[in-house]
Image (tube, rainbow over all chains, first blue to last red; front, side, top):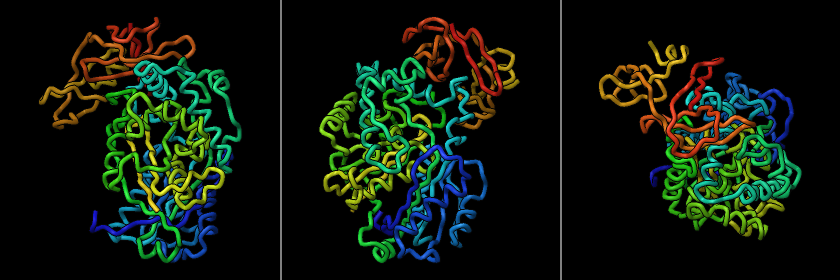
Length: 372
Length: 102
């Protein structure tokens, strides 16, 4: 790793997450515009690559965004990997910069509320149960059975994350809920209520990565990407060996922490991919924040003490889940936290942050470690 | 005949590599281990219920066959973890596979 160039985050822009019916091209431009407004030192002529993260079926979106934003990049393409498209794009951008192929890269993720990325049509082993609520129901049932966890206990994830989202002006959810509200919300399956789910929505998030020299020129507070881990164990949900833990997350987390020379105790703030309530304790355990089966103890304690360490922006459950934008929005949140710029969501003096973004029932995971 | 042609006729076969004898799942033309040609093994097969949930009155369960393949299937009665089942109905509906076990 020592031979590679250091890579830092030098700018970001994000839109509110809504149910708006807008064209994908406009949604993409919205957060890119915001980014250039936020950091006016960035010269668009210096952008070597534009990467677009989305599950939208429209074609040629990176050249389109480039043209709309007045950029003529050397490299321009789209990256799709269902729900972790965003962090996959950041990893690609990192690689271009670390290898010396590019100095500065714009990464923009965007999605419409009706994204085709919600259903993986290929996965026929799921039979007629292809909607994500069914894998989430199997995960939830399995986790509850294995670790004797009740629906009421799991509901705390949703209560906590909606509470935290209330401090995030870009979040889809504007309300707080009680445990009773969660367990009495619309029943989707025997094991899943509506308020246990993240919601698809319209939104966009942009970030700029740059080489060390460039980063130091463009910002006083660069945030460095010091650890990257990725693992894909399969594409099909039923290929998972465990339905109460996340193998790909475990492996990606170990790789990222090793690269950053950190362990989970060093992490001051983290964004966790809580697509459904059960995903938060499962991911915390797989990442080593908690021993197996005790993730809810940690979540309860954080909630009781009003500590925003995990999912400060409200997670996917509170913020909404515009698939291609989610991993980038998570990375922006950790950047703001490390820059002490997270407003009412600010965690006390964080130095090291972690992003966990996954797709298709944890068949693929990306973990990033960010540092001041 | 392919796995899907059989499934379309309501018959469940298990794809197996003619060379390395590994089960190939999801069904494919070539083995994902040795790229050998895949043939279809005829049942009946006994499956084991790994997990389940319910939507409205319909139970659905994760069933494992041959210690390798896992599918999600309908089941009419309350399932039990570890219960032995067999496929009672299967097919393709609007491009989606469907399975029922008893």
